Amino acid sequence: MKHYLSINDIDSLPDWVEEAINLKKDPYQFEGLGKRKTLCLLFFNNSLRTRLSTQKAAMNLGMEVMVMNFGSEGWALEYGDGTIMDQGTSEHIKEAAQVVSQYCDIVAIRAFAGLEDRKKDEAEEVINGFATYASIPVVNMESSVGHPLQALADAITMAENKTKARPKVVLSWAPHPRALPHAVANSFVEMMKRQDAEFVITHPEGYELNPEITQGCRIEHDQDKALENADFVYVKNWSSYMDYGKIVSKDPNWTMTEQKLGKAKFMHCLPVRRNVVVEDAVLDGTQSLVAQQAKNRIYSAQVVLKKILENL
Ligand code: CP
Image 1 (tube, protein in one colour):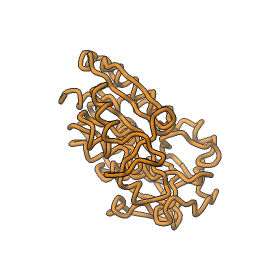
Image 2 (cartoon, rainbow, N blue to C red):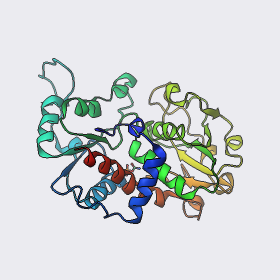
Image 3 (cartoon, rainbow, N blue to C red):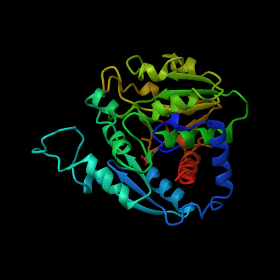
Image 4 (spheres, helix red, strand yellow):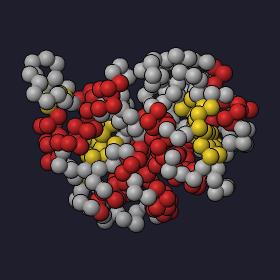
C-alpha cells in the first residue's frame, strides 16, 4: 500500500483490525520502524482527535511529526491546470506537494467538503492533488467524501465489543444546527459493507446518502423500526446529498435517547452536540463507546502508518 485514501486501501479488514488490537496491547513494539522518518500533518480544517491521535500513533512508531494548520497559515492553493493565477490563489498544488515531499516521508491531510458544489467536493482536489503531485505516501485524515481513519477505529471498537458473530448495526441520522459533510457516514457505510453484520441505515426522507455508496444497504425511514434489537447504534448528522449541503430537517424526534437505544452500544465519532444529537444520559451512560472509539483512533492510525513505513 502506498497511500491510505479510503477504506478501499485496506486489503483485509479483519487482519488490519487484529493487527491494531495487537498494537494496542503493546504500542511500542515497532518503535524502531519510524526512526529518522517524518510525518507531516496538514490541516485545512479544525481537529482534536485526528490531530492528537495521529501524532501519538507516529510517536509510538518512533517517527518525528510536523504539524501545520494549512487552512489558516499556508498560502491559498490553486488546483486548476493552466490557470492564470492573477486572482486569490498564491501557490499551485504542484509546487506545494513537491516541496512538502522534500521535508517529510509521509504526508497526512485533512480537507473537508465545502458543501456548495457537489462535483467539486467529489473531485477531492486537495487530497487527490497531493496524491498526484507528491512523491511520498498520502494519508486521508478526513477529506470531502471519506474519513477512513475513523471508520477503521470504528471497526476496531466493534470488534472489541461485539458479543455475537453477526451483530445488528444501525447508522442513524440525528439533527444538528449546522450543515455537516457526509464523510464519516460514507466511510462507516463502506466499512460496514465489508463486515459480517445485519446493517441498517435510518434517516428522514431527503437525507439519502450517495446511492453509489449505500448500494445494497437496507434503508429504513422509520427510526424505531430500524433500532429494533440493535447491538450497535452509530449516530451521525449529515446534510442532504440530493439537495446538496442543505439542512432539510432538524426534527428533534431523531435525537438519540436512552429509551431508543435500548440495550445497544452507542457510537459517535465526536465532536458531538449534547442534547441535540444525543441526550446526556446516553453519553454519560455505560453503553457509550465514544471514548473507546477516540482511543482507537491511535491504533487505526498506527496500523496505517506501520504498513506504509514497511513499504518505504
Ligand atoms: N472524529 C474526529 O475526526 O474528530 P476531530 O474532528 O476532532 O479530529
